[in-house]
Amino acid sequence: MKRVLIAVVWGYFALLLIGPVAYVCAQAFDGGVPAFWNEVTKPEAVHGFWLTAKITLIVVVANVAFGTATALVLARQRFRGQTFFSGLIDLPFAISPVITGFMLILLFGPGTILGAFFGTMDVKILYAVPAMVLVTLFVTFPFVVREVTPILQAVGTDSEEAARTLGASEWQTFLRVTLPAIRWGVIYGATLTIARAIGEFGAVLVVSGNILLLTQTATLHIYQSYVDFNYLGAYAVAVVLLSISFMILMLLEVAKARSADASGAEPVSP
Amino acid sequence: MTTKIQVRSVSKRFGDVEVVSNVSFSVGEGELLGLLGPSGSGKTTVLRIIAGLESPTTGDIFLDGLRVNDVPVQERNIGFVFQHYALFKHMTVFENVAFGLKIKRRSKADVRARVAELLELMGLSGLTDRYPRQLSGGQRQRVAIARALAPRPRVLLLDEPFGAVDAQVRQELREWLIRLHHDLNVTSLFVTHDQEEAMEVSDRLIVFSKGHVDQIGTPAEVYEEPATEFVARFIGSMNIVEAEVKGGLARVRELEFPVPHADDGRRIRIGFRPYYVKISEDPLHFRQHARLRHIYFLGVAYRLEIETDTGLIFRSRMNKEEFRQRRFEVGQRVSYAITQFRVLPEDQGAGYSSRPLAEGPLTP
Image (cartoon, rainbow over all chains, first blue to last red; front, side, top):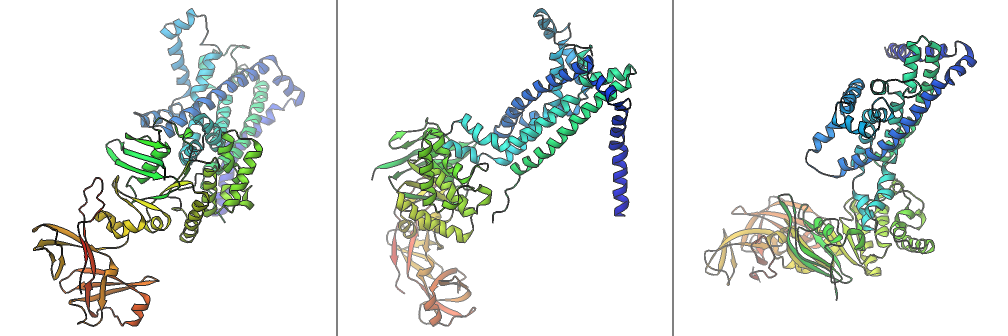
């Protein structure tokens, strides 16, 4: 019975994960390494990688800063509507990315006050990088908050108060006591954010306009190559993203273990 | 003795709940003072208000004669020891103790010397590079005290300092705190709900109930002359009966207590410690009669529980030697007498009166 169960799980795993990944890798190198290299170094592909990297970097920095701040407010402050606010944080998980994209189009369209305002300022939001950053921020917002809040709650305020009585200001306390206690949670949240930002497709497609060499990210490039019957190009870029995702996954495991160490119960003393 | 800490008419509300009501007391330079009370009596809140971790709703705090209500925690220069140690988990013992000194930008050599001195004093010298998770409860609490003392605070505040360690270590830590206080002579205030611990460690005690101060005094004063019925019950064990006064005597069933100063018709409460209840196995030795219900062995003494012929239940205490010379059995008929009693002051709720209404020995 046990063996059957293990075999079923392996079979399911192979069918769902290993199979497709192996197939994509095989296809990517179907024309040999030079053809693969040729595809991933094409100007459109390189531009896609760069754009994805740029958006990801901005999003991770913003998410770590505001996510940690939000977690601090949620875990340490008491205010009216807190439960509602806390529930709202998960909203990006519940909304389809495509809808997220459309919301942004409705918000910044030329007919709206916001759209008109930025239009007169000559700042392009829609079909440009700002909108792509905004939607990616939206879909990744919960990651850092959801990781850090429970750790802050578990750590409690005792050691922060101890630091204050020892002469530390609020800012010194945050840097020297709070931040080291939550750092692995922050890193874990940041890693999830990176993975999601690199892979985001739906929301970015809607707000970017998918303009070649301007607003085409790596995932959009894969989609475009596929639509244009350039299967090798799609597979090659996909393999690069897959490898990055795999490395992030490994990093994630390390961060997860450390963050469990930090927030978990103290080991029994001898 | 100069006044180090003064708490003046301090009250604290959390929403609709007043957890501290109009508390006033002062602490002299070099004193070791215990704040004693059951949980929820407001003693920890008072300690946190002195530290600046909470602000009083009304009232003032003075340190060295200066009002510090508006001085933030980090500038009050107090040492605070938390019940659950609150050590910095990501720092070694050395780094924990050095924290306050580094914040104050002391030179590296100064920091190293001061930390070494304190670790030596605390008997932690070999543990410099350990992390808190590698220490026992007693060691952690000593690191916490070393950390609090390192920046030479003007007062040391300890919140249930031995609450989280087991009984044997607790006893060691108590004796060690007394010695430490004797050596360093830093003004110290500690919170506890353990009356035995408070009596053993403190020069003076402040007894809290329901956010009020019920009594301030030396352990002996508080024990021998409890200012309220609450204090009488909370500190040590006490038998309590309610009686009506008639012609200078308080009567309850077969018992009569002479109370010359009480008004006729008043209902008063009378208390007597277990060791003032004398018991004899000879039914004719004392005038009152009872049945022995239980015998408890307490280590150094025995506690005997009797039920009088009219159904009152009293506790008596007898030392081991005396008990061994007698022959007591559960269920046996005995005679008893109450040799001393006191009229308990009524609990007024606020403030405290330092003198009981009357007291006196009873002739058997």
